[in-house]
Image (cartoon, rainbow, N blue to C red):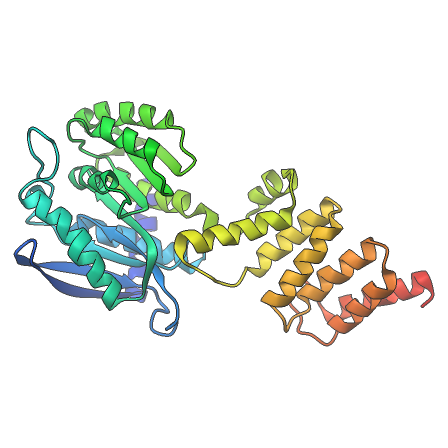
Length: 382
């Protein structure tokens, strides 16, 4: 198990070397000092000059940045999550003061209040001005910083939409405050919480009740995820939780899998076509991305429509595929199939024939299109 863990960690760290990682300094009036940052830009950041990117802020950047950045680069390379800008804040000498809160109100004061304002009023505007960012922002923290990031949820609207809380060292009253805010939020919030069976005992004693309370929250705007890693410690849970958090929070972005096809698309009460439209609309709204639909997603929906004999949806899919991939035969294929199954064989035959002039894509070939047209011609004597 250890060898597997270190192999995965090495792979993730090796991906950092191929992404664009740079070191910056930001002068802060709030902190009255200069802060060091680590910033990883997406691989194609320089060439995709029109594209904007979500931002992940990593607290405890002196040790959390590399595992987060490595996983982000790996998952985005395989299109399991969108490309994002990762920003690590170095807190090696300031961690205790950065996360300081009042003994009575249990809210940030003094250096803690200054650090809170530094991120919201200085760092995020600086990033927005210097880089091509969009509206989705996520934050990652571990024990003290995992508690601290919750304070951003206490403001409306919250600065971050995604929260990765790794074994938080919760302040008094944080459990009550956090549950109340998650229950009342009108923003879409993604909240991931992790502990482990070998985590620090006093932390587990507050994390487990917190999980029980959040699970009772009824709010359609909240997406909540929890893990309790068997055999992991306070430190090793980080390596297991980061990829799990990425998988959960960005699940809507991933290509349609075999499991999603069988358990969701084929069991829908509505149309798989509508599911596809909703999926990409949600991705655009959440992550500010307007990428072309994946060919494999269109094909998966096409198979589901065929299984359900939903020929109206198939025609809609064909029109959509024509817009998404106009130079290929993808759209013509689904249009022709819808015409064929809806009792319009002559129209289907001509659409298959016209596809011959377009580019092949995936399983669709010129021979297949001609065979389809010839079969209709033979069947109906055209």
